[in-house]
Image (cartoon, rainbow, N blue to C red; front, side):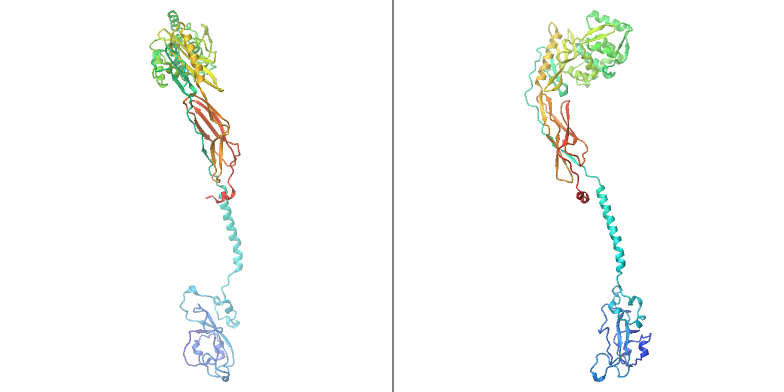
Length: 540
């Protein structure tokens, strides 16, 4: 092939037919200058190669033809002697060499429209990678796009699956409890005794009121409330069971006889007699037997002094700051306390069902003693359910009563205690004072509306919605209260889930004063709609 080095000014030469068709047509173009002086030379009809052509590229098709007639006019291009060429026409591909100074990245294949003009008999002289145009394989591209679409589809499906499988965020319940305030009204005026001390209490409300400043005085058989409480605390007993069996001794029989001779209350016993824990408690609390107090004390602690020590420790733990025990029965005038202190131990004792069952009895029956009457004569009448009486010359009439009263439909237990009551029948006087106190306290209690049925006590917020769903009380709540007390409210809720329908219970509202506590269910006023598909897919 003819290798183009540009234009040269070499001398004329001759070019034969065989030279043009030779496969070794590598003579410089300049060597043809003389022979082509009358021939039109063009690069595909142009005098320059295509832009970006580098060495080794087909840059042009050189056409060699006979010179025209001299009389036909001027011919542009290099001059060639007339008759120097035979009457032939050849098209020779021209390759540029050496390479032009362009980077390899700018090498271009021969455009398709030029490659089509390379004659067949010259095509073998063009390198295959130059002669074949760089045509995009459209069929290969068509084969690839379904796979690309499949990958995209799988990716979208995975992202969608992950988003839909994620758990919903928590549904929050916010409290919106109504305000509360102290119960209005003046403190009731109570019928306090003119002699001795008195105190009242409503255990479920946590209310205790004394008649005035208190000082420790002998409390007689009120002491046995602590004795019975400690026995049941250390030796628990169900109300309908008898418990352990104790065998009484000759010493126990002698003690009972001695107390009977001194005029102290007692229960006759015999050596070898067997009494259960429940029978001993019946004789202690119903018939106020001093001798049975000592039997229980020795059984519980080993000795009476050891038991008395336990009594004083327990009194301190209960907050009985003015009380001191010197014995287990109260016969010793050194055992002293106050009406207010006695209500503290009574509240603890009445919290034990067996104790409450024992003191509520009007009579009991023991094997040797037979039927014994309760010294608290009002038990079983006018709602009185116990508790204990006491009398000595030092203490005079002492009595603690427990009475059940109904106030505005609420059942309430009221306690009253008096000490130092005089009179021909000090226990009867004490009983009258206590009953009046029970009634006055019940009359002084107030019913307090806390919340109405359907009242809003909270709201539920949904992370996927601006909706706020009210939470309302299922029914009204009212409490008993002593003037000046303030109720408290609390809302406890279960785990909340979307999709809950209107009326679904979501928790509990509690209202309380002291130990009184009322629980009512709360529910959502509207349904808790779930998140939309769009929100589930778009959430971050």
